Length: 266
Image (cartoon, one colour):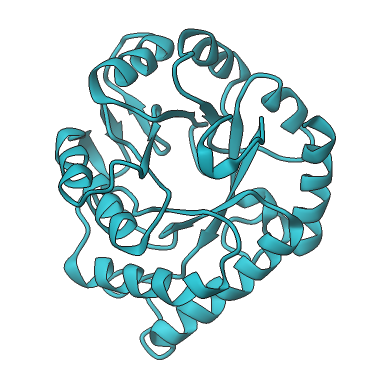
């Protein structure tokens, strides 16, 4: 068992539901407002669930350029969108506000999410500048909000960034479980839509046996067999989109084709 909300599944697929740009970000469509954001996410959720994914994670990938600290109005907007979509959900859900772990925990806690994903540990040189994390604050917030049941998924090697920590990735992963109470470790590629190095995935999976290890980026129908031979599950966004383009709507046929392969592996 990976987490209890996945039941007896030995391999899990978490699909991304990318919310359109939120208020305050340059790409926000003020004319369409929250109604347009909700409409777009609902359409994607319908296709993801019809295709058979195991869970859905709401993310604000469209809020480019990204920030390290969420604004009050973007937190409110993302919370409102998730709450509006909840009645349509048939599978467990999680949230991820890029790149603010405290905001992710706050939104997840109040909306009833089963899990949150973020960069909780490490120091990185990134497109957004020097990235110095703070795991203690969101962990304490989760506890203060009585949501210790909500899993914290640690993305151990940030996208759009390079770790300044020179320790091997497997040691950083093992340390995050020991010192920072990670509920799962996620291994990413260098950028959204690009796969993690299989060797990194293997090293982390061999070093971390106490919690699940997921592949976090770049998983597709061609490499999922190799990935799931090592990982407990995958987080997948780009491959499920029309033409495999991160910013396009979900393509139901791609989801179904991918999930058919996964079903043959479990």
